[in-house]
Image (tube, rainbow, N blue to C red; front, top):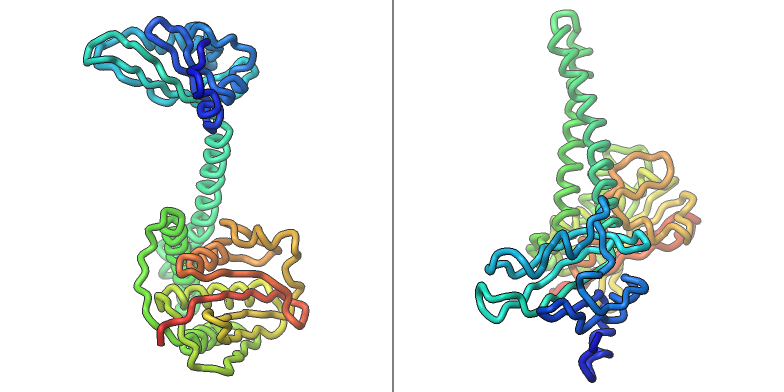
Length: 339
């Protein structure tokens, strides 16, 4: 193998493995990453590159890089196995001096398949979790609707009302989960639509606390000494953040829940505290991951992930600390508005 003079450090600095051969299959370049991936391969003849598929067929014979149609200019990425069984993702570029001319150079890119395997596993886990979350309320809806259809004449009005109320609650839960999943997808892809403008935080907090307070026996209180604190935000997204934080405190915390708002430099500090057991340091980083749950309380596990995503896309931050009463304290720092 003849490595181009002065280029060795450049090739070896690449994160992916690179193998380049001339028109006769003689290897010109095999960088450090490729040498590590391919083991003791002498890197002299491309035909001997130690890559096999799961049936034992070798890469060179299977792909035939120097043969085929004259319009062929590349080999799509495929999964191959190194001698030690490591999965490698390999794609190749076939260089021709002109269309239909013989291949005069073959360039291979190799990278570890571990990242793709992790991504595939995460996607499988995501699909399984979503399916489970959707199945539960759908089962309830289907069961009660079936009962209503089959026994309508034998049910009294109170029984019908109870079943329809349950169906409505399950349908609302389904709708909320779908909205959350769409928000997660938009956050992940950076396609979240925002319509920011100056928003008074006190107005948002008061509305959220009043709404949630009507559906819980927990004591909710606010601490807003300066009601003129204004942030630059999409009002719907800010409402969603405060709602998720308060609902999370109701679901997982204990005692009184307090929502406070203060100006802190060029940011507004929105804090939600409870009097529960708090969140241990060891798991605080995991709170903002998808489908994270702690304890036996319900919920989709997407609320805090969405809180973090919506806050960051506005230029803010979310941190977890300890409340004075021993519970959890979630602090959101949100950029102040122009007004």
